[in-house]
Amino acid sequence: MSVTRLLILGAVRIFQPAHGYLLRRELTSWHADDWANLNPGSIYNALRSLTRDGLLREQLSEQRPAGPRGEPQPPTGRPRPAARASYSLTPDGEAHFLGLVRTAIWQVHLFEPAWLAAGISFWWVLTRAEALAGLSARRARLEGDLAWCGLQADAMISSPATPDHVAEHFRLSQAMIRGEIAWVDDVSVRLSQGAYAFAGEDRDCGLQVSGPAMMPSATASVRAAGSVRAAGATRPDNQS
Figure (cartoon, helix red, strand yellow):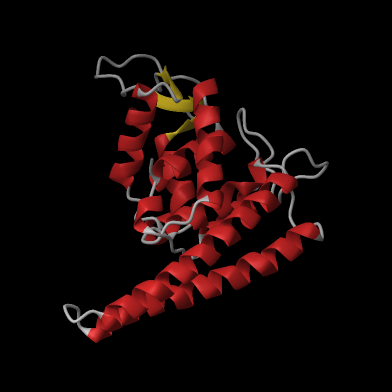
């Protein structure tokens, strides 16, 4: 699993059917190239692999340059433009996407903070109750990781084979975990008080997206959440 797959599936879900350039432009506007290391090549590679895996449906349409009033131009004898591919989620893709959102919220990733940022970007596809449950489960994991890092820091100090300063790696992780626990507590209160919009609620999530076959979406909220540089931590054996 990867953050890239989550971002691509989520962006396609908002704009479907969506072509690669639209997805690239949209995700760049979230600064995903910074916090998720997402580049144009990885976007197009992900579209191909997700299609191959049956999670996206590819539709091809030939595009001919339009005339001054938008009418199709007659053939000129020159090579015709390549077909443009657009993508939509398959039922398997929808299920996989929801699973990735839940993974991003429930699981804690030590060296991949982009997971949480991507999860926040799409948590509005969950119900409010499920989002709160995921945050509660996340907090419990963070508490366990905090204790584990403390034990590891003590072990580094007491080990004659390890330089004492290595303990600071674990103390840094502890500081990050404490910060995230404080955020989980704060955002859980906001969600409990009705902040934001979630699946099944009678309001949209921020901004109506217009265009062919586009659905009401949380694009404004997604962009704001997507720029969050969240810090997560977990034991190595919890990595996804």
